[in-house]
Length: 96
Image 1 (cartoon, rainbow, N blue to C red):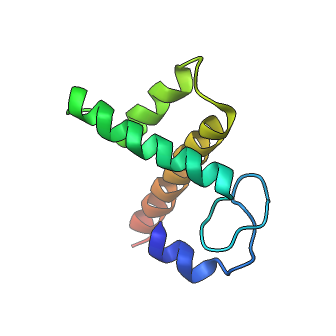
Image 2: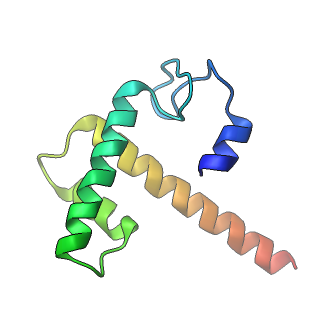
């Protein structure tokens, strides 16, 4: 998502989730911290469960009662983005 996002997202845009103003990320500072927390957590989970995918990890995190609201919002956003990308890729393959 990094390169595509950078091309379509200008400085001074808004957070992909809450519409707060952002400068260099798809997320505001709160959602960016939540994303970093998810990434850090994934590396720990991956060490314990080598077969776990990013999507499965996100699903698991969403089921935990202790998961914070910003983290939940980022996880849901990532899952939606992945589903949208898969649907787009599927549509492109069927049109060829």
